Image 1 (spheres, rainbow, N blue to C red):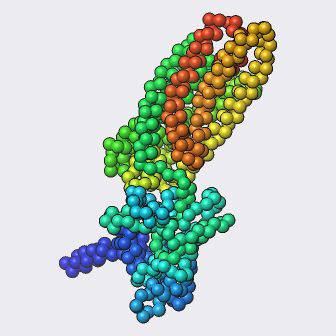
Image 2: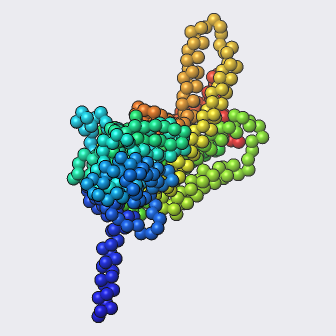
Length: 523
């Protein structure tokens, strides 16, 4: 009996003490809406679970001397002795407790745009550098309006050119919302780090790209554009597939087979995007739904397949335009299919095994509201960063650059063919010559624009999203309508083939060669 009572008492004591560990403070305080005050108080009195704590540094220091604290290798805090002495308050004890910790910025909820003029002046918008927020606490009283500021250093690898030092200004103690303020902080940028000088102790961060932000109103408009565009692209891509099947039955050609594969990948991309956006609204709070994980995997796979087949279209065009002779490749389509479908499948399978898929949260710059979709989960942290940069930044960049070079070759070939047609027509009939020139110019533009969509060049407009909000709108409109553009290209291709079959003596040969001979070769 006494043994049972002793064990029960020990277990209850252990459970009650679990929340006193520094590693558990954030999770415990996050259970409350206003977690910031809770965290500031408990981080000063908590105990480490072991000898080493990741992202948290506690020191007992002499307030008459300055102190340096480094919660991580990338962050360093220098606190002058004047700040430490003020943090003592009326306590006669010379030593004070100093704590510096690093928190993920996703825990901080932004409040709606302020009407207060002071808040409007000091409020700063932007992305938190590396999602890292440094909390600095000392003594047992608030420290502000320091004559000798504290200094914080945020190391960087030159991935950003500028930033702004800010601190977290809480506006509502009830729900913990607030905003990033630059009041009382100065920013210095060196070759290796940001140096922030602030006249108080608080939660500090560095905002980068402060000029680019998406408000709730803009996000709603972009969502409607995306849903409407994808809603049109999916059925038009399906119709395009039937057109290519019809053309392939009449004239079995390798280029049309490539168009079919690209169209299937694009159809899957738009359809899966619509399904993932719809499903995530139905799931609500079920963060780890297996359905969302599967849809996120399929959506990522569809994007990779679309980009891969776009790159293969560019490669095929390279063979036709550069290596015109001796380009026979045994089982050419089979090898392209192994790359076009195999590469995305392997990447998606590896990511799925690593469990990087799930619910992804989009945060607005002007409110505490969020939007969700089934994609690469934002809970994966380091995995998310690696997967996102390689598969959604580096790979598309490679595809766009390569295919842009191929399109440049097409433009050069058209121009070269036009030079051979300069003597076309009679020199006396200027009106007829000008009319024919306009026709040829129109066909050339259609050819170049059609190839741009087939080669996936609209993905290159992603770079404009880092420049302005208008770039985000342009990127969203053009890429959400890619299925429609593929449909228009298939119709133009069918019309071109029909015209070639009905009239073998077409005088305007340059664009026709690009659309039929070059891009629909049987090699």
